[in-house]
Image 1: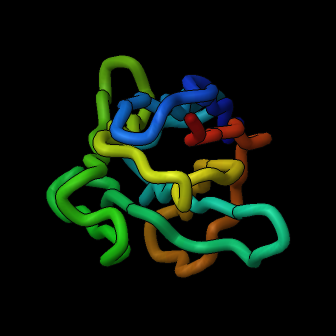
Image 2: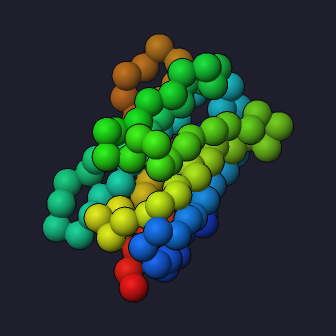
Length: 118
């Protein structure tokens, strides 16, 4: 499985971005997918994840009500819609996948930079 993120960029506080995670080599129907971010000088933080079926989604408290994760089986992709962005959301955002039955994010994309600044 290969993952490629896109959609990052520079946005003003209060703005929106939509990150995409495009998969190839296997179907995401067999994987849970998560978005993990790493801010400068900080460790990685799990932001959101979606189950392989798409029926279960989770969010870290700091993004609840602002971010929405979704999947598109036809496009074999997962998205993260980010609204009401704050400077503290600035980070490199990675998508990662865990095969059904595994609790480990075994597959990672290269990351996409999100910068929230005026």
